[in-house]
Length: 87
Image (cartoon, rainbow, N blue to C red; front, side, top):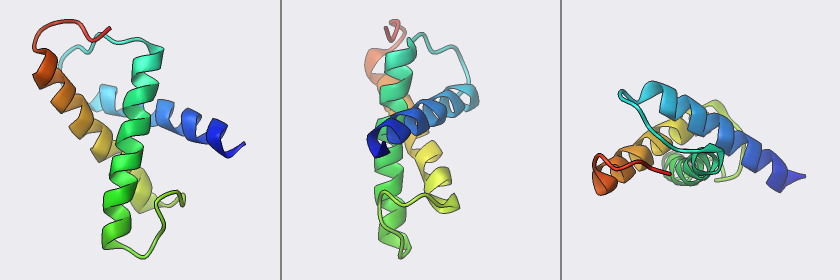
């Protein structure tokens, strides 16, 4: 059950990051979910270094860190692929 919730949370974080990032991002549902999961793991890891929470704990700082992490992953992916579609 924990893995399913992590995937759903990653999808939601990916949607939020795509909504906050200016411009059009052409990616499907799987890429959005992968973006959210990668950003969530990266943001959760960085927040766990600063706070006393664990990486997989659900808390407000982790949610904000997950969205910021997903924005960073999206920006890096956008710079690597340039103007090509992220499909």
